[in-house]
Image 1 (tube, helix red, strand yellow):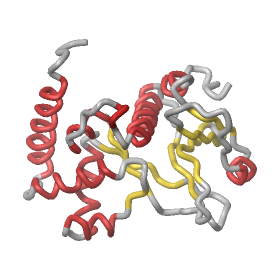
Image 2 (cartoon, rainbow, N blue to C red):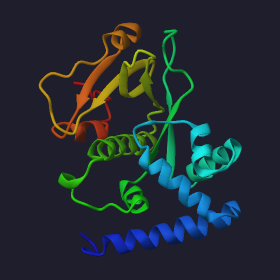
Image 3 (cartoon, rainbow, N blue to C red):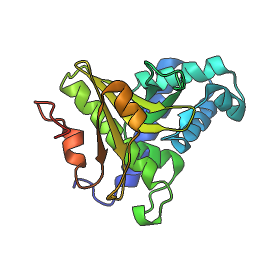
Image 4 (cartoon, rainbow, N blue to C red):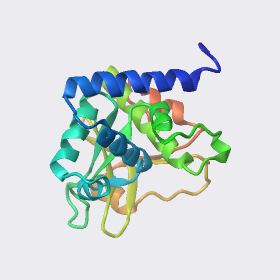
Amino acid sequence: MNNKGRERTILKNLVSSYLYRDILAFSEIRKPEILDNLLLALALQVGNEVNYNELAGTIGINKITIQKYIDILEKGYIIFRLNSFSRNLRSEIKRNRKIYFYDNGIRNMIIGNFNPLKLRMDVGALWENFLISERKKQNIYKETFARMFFWRTKQQQEIDFVEERDGKIYGFEFKWKAKSKVRLSKTFIKTYNAETKVIDRNNFREFVLINDSGSFLE
């Protein structure tokens, strides 16, 4: 690995030069401390639904400014949004979104945590962010034209990641530790005639890399 032992320094320089020079200059943001606070709030909420009104209250700015800053960060390929999937059920959450980082290293630098995984409380969030961000990159690179979502109902039924591809619906549940019995929502499977799979450390490569045939559920 190049620059072994200097990873933190390199990430720090990257965040400082790219976020606080290029993006701030390009977007003409006048208050970098707002960007600091917003990024920290988003980094701490990875894997959870994000409410713009709550963010605005936490940071002390209005909702429109939050939306503007998130749009700038998305155009700068720092973060991306995942909207909720909804087609048929009245009980589905329809307008919420989750926000992920394109790179876990950037997120770690923002929250100032580079501890080994065994000492961290956010392993699940890191794992989910890694899988979804790498899947997104591969979908873009391989031009699959897949649409990406998460799914939840008001009764707290959830699917971590939903992909709509070539008219077919796929659902994925992410687990850092493999479990023998993981039950995915029967409501989701039945309603959308969906194919589903649990992704853990034993099979994540097939999920991330997306083979050309698209048979990633076999």
